[in-house]
Structure formats: structure tokens, C-alpha cells
Amino acid sequence: MDEPGANETGQWIQTPITEVKAIERSRNSMITTREEIREYVETPIVDACEHFWDLNVRTLSSSANEKDVDRKAYIILDYDSLSDANKKIAEESGEKIDNYDGRPAVDILIPVTKDTTAEDIRVKATEIANRFKKQKATWIPSYSLQEMRQIYAIDPNDDEYGVEGFVEEGYFYDIEGKRFYLSEEHYNKTKEKIIDTV
Image (tube, rainbow, N blue to C red):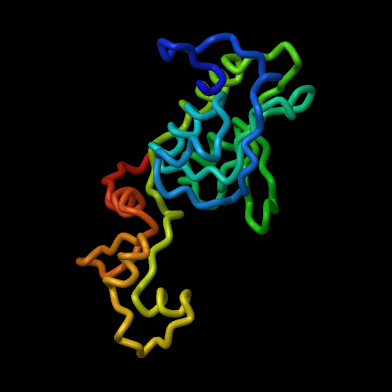
């Protein structure tokens, strides 16, 4: 079955938001690949969240489905991970939250009524996302071998479980930096050359 919003030619159709079902996945999950976004994000705001990913802007949570009627669709950004330029844009585009699960965040809100279409939300969310600038991906975690052993409750001095074991678990290992990443995409993001914008 095709996802709501796309017809057989791949073009957007005027799907009412009342027909978009919620994706029930845990918020604040760490996305590790661009492809993974569609597993967590509802169709109307996939384009915006993919654009944020390309800009190295971390999204914490989002919603754009039938449950948002007479409320608001939203995309929540990790405020502390934003560049200074993007912090300013975020504050102009959304509402600052001082404590969102223990961290500052920005809530980008899009009004939703029963007459709102998925395309209405897609257009608005994408327009907002396009205001942001590309930035350094400061939010991406990495771990030393010792830290990985601690995470897995392995004796720090146990040399039997080395780099290969964690790579087999799905981690990406940077041989030069001697750090583990949750994915190769995460690693590549940390190596991007970004020109700081004011």
C-alpha cells in the first residue's frame, strides 16, 4: 500500500491530514541514516526532516497526522546543537522550550484543521526548513574502545573483545581517529567541511 500523499507517479496528491496515520515510535531516538527518517516521520514532514538532516540540524521529535487536527503539527529541534546562525533562525521560526526531556529545544509549529491537507503541511514545513543554514554536526556521538567496553559492561582490560567485535555489532570504526560511530553516515557528517555563517 502506497504511503499517504503519493500517487502512482510519485507526485503529491491532496490527502486530507485526517487520513494520515500516526507513526508510533519513541521520540528522541537517535537517527543514524537519512533513510531511517521515514521510519519515524510522517509523510507530510518527511521532506523538511530530510532537509534538516542534510543541513546537520538534529530533530528530536515530530508529528503531522490525524491526531493533530485542531492542534498543531510540529518539528522539535535540539537547540544546543544549533549553530549561532541557526539558533537565531530557530527562535524566529518557532517557540523556544527551556526543558524538553532535560535539554533546550525549539518547537516549530504548523496549525492543523480538519480541512488541512498533507500537502499544506509539507509546503509550510519545507518552507521553514529552507530558512536554515548548513552547520557542523556537533550532536553526533563517538566512542573510544574503552568507552564501548564500558557501555557493554565488558572489563576495560579485556582485550578479547576488540574493534572487530563492535564492528560486527553494526558500529562504524574510524581507524585514523580510533573512534566508533553509530553509522558511517554519522562519521561522514563529522568530516564535512562547513563554512561558518553568521
